[in-house]
Amino acid sequence: MSAIILGWDPARWNQWNYSAVVEQVAVTGLHLEPWTVNRSVAAGTDAWLLLLGAHGPGLIGHGVVLSEQPGPSARQDTTKITVQVAFDALLPLGDQLSADVLHAMIGSVPWGSLEQVTELEPGDGARLRDVWADYGPERGPDPTLPAPGTYPDDAVARLAVNRYERDPMARRACIAHRGTNCAACGFSFEMAYGEVGADFIHVHHVVPASQLGSGYQLDPLTDLVPLCPNCHAMAHHGVSSPRSEAELRQIIANAGYLRGTTVTPEELEAQRVGLEVLGNGKSAQ
Image 1 (cartoon, rainbow, N blue to C red):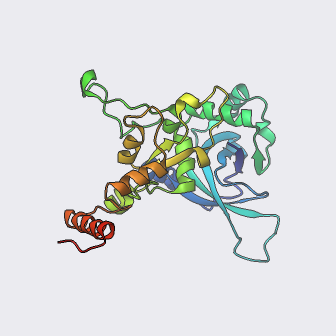
Image 2 (image 1 turned 90 degrees about the vertical axis):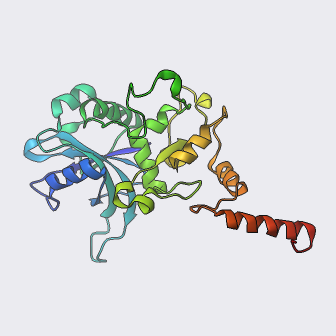
């Protein structure tokens, strides 16, 4: 997965209320911000926010590039491109990862002389992820998992979920690309629960963990798919190789359900009668 550094100097550009944005990300997990860059950037690219100026350099945030968007005026500099960045983790001003930490951990990057947009080498991008995991914002508990000690060991059903499905950054990239509706049944937590359910969905890895070699490089745009917890459980339930989203859709259809809807017993009976009519070539009695 590609990664870029976005340089931000508050003394030169401060059109957002950064403290409020930090709070928003802490509460909702996401903030969308248009960002002007000097080169084309692919959707799904990791975007690392580097604080510049009097208090920099210091790593202060992470996001994912969603898409490019046209500028508001044809008179604008054509060398400038605006991208939409979904920031999903930001540190308060003063808590940024210092230059000393960055130089010590990833000395191959010239942190003190970076351009407005700097593309990282794949190895540097992977190391930066590790550094951020150790020094970045603390991760909250996973609300989809039972609290430790709340159930006896023999009462918990365990599913084989690989580590890529638990990678928060890969999950965010998948959601940015494919949305938060379940790819199998169409369920939307936001439509069902309103603001409480916004941005909530599981992600499922389409390649069985047993087939992944040691040199495997995850592409969250093609390797991960959003699934609701029910469909995610059924993807793994009772099989050694997880079911695909197409298989899940077929299973749901065969069971008499439509994507995003529950079929009533009366509708199921009407469907049965209709199938009898078609199969026998005569009306149902």
